[in-house]
Length: 410
Ligand SMILES: Cc1cc2nc3c(=O)[nH]c(=O)nc-3n(C[C@H](O)[C@H](O)[C@H](O)COP(=O)(O)OP(=O)(O)OC[C@H]3O[C@@H](n4cnc5c(N)ncnc54)[C@H](O)[C@@H]3O)c2cc1C
Image (cartoon, rainbow, N blue to C red; front, top):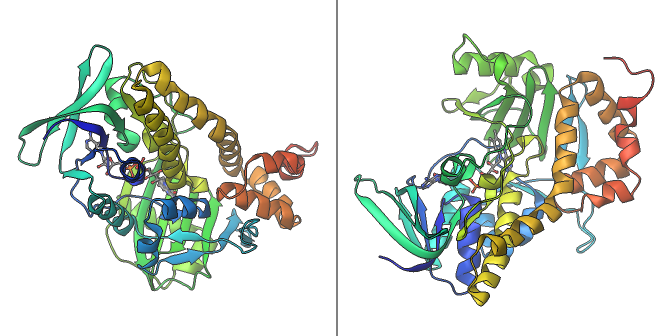
């Protein structure tokens, strides 16, 4: 079948959000994914509360709620084995209620999302790996690839959206990845049962050689993700390393002691990177394909959904003007940068600080004595408060002051 308005590569949150958004606007959309769903993904499985309104607009929130997902009221953070500090999301100015974040296994979430896309009338091609682009002069006008039987396929469209995640085709084809930011990291994840009651918080425990995120993802089921410096992992099996590092930290040990891992440990490289602008027309990148930040602040899914929303606006405007040139589509990069750059800076600063015990303790101390600051930070990280509230509220100095005081030890 040929001649779609838009072809989307990738059926993760970014690709599905884009497909639903464009479908709601009346466009003929096709979506290709190399995987057969349900497919799993290494992830903290924690979706910032800021994603709720987007999921509602896209018509998927009800279906997610029907799974009776775990709802988390905030984060419980421990710095280098100190007591946990529980931070709730701040009261919403719109509803006067405290929002919560969803905690749903990716395997379920992504399959449900894709099913919604299919039911909406988008043409889905599962097990279709896209390996190249079709060009008309300097504009992308389609994709080529192989299906599950290794039969080649070609699909044409006025525009292609690459939502292929951190290893998206465009990043390789056009050498778009900027030099990786920070040290090389590796993430390990598995679901557990029988762990200690988790109190509706995502438990973040920071200590050498990295951090863990532990949260309930259903009845008697917890997702336990460990992210470490890649250099720390050598000469051991994935399982031995994962258990050894988890149990080395007394806070994690307390939670996991009577628990049992339910599946093999999955691992994935987890290094943040930026992305250069696309050098041709007819192609838009969304989600992780547009850049990836260390998952410490757990915002990737929100950012993927939101980047698709911003891009869909620009694509819609492009259809109205019949303009899919590189220059026109660059409007999306500009809007995305305006909205996200402050947040990326804050996330990077926090990620940098947590890898130093003294800095991490200092930030935790600032948060523990200033509830307003702690909740505002949770609101910004949870994508329900703009990052400018940290600056405008005069919170930057209180947040980081301990780290840079004259008498700092290291
Ligand atoms: C360790 C870790 C923990 C994380 N924890 C969290 C968290 O708690 N909360 C959070 O919000 N985010 C978290 N993230 C980030 C989150 O997982 C990503 O931001 C999110 O999955 C990005 O969605 P996406 O749709 O852009 O890409 P993906 O979810 O990666 O989907 C991409 C899809 O594209 C398909 N694809 C790729 N290439 C091709 C091709 N050539 N042809 C056809 N199909 C293709 C793939 O099969 C895949 O289905 C975490 C990430 C890591 C690494």
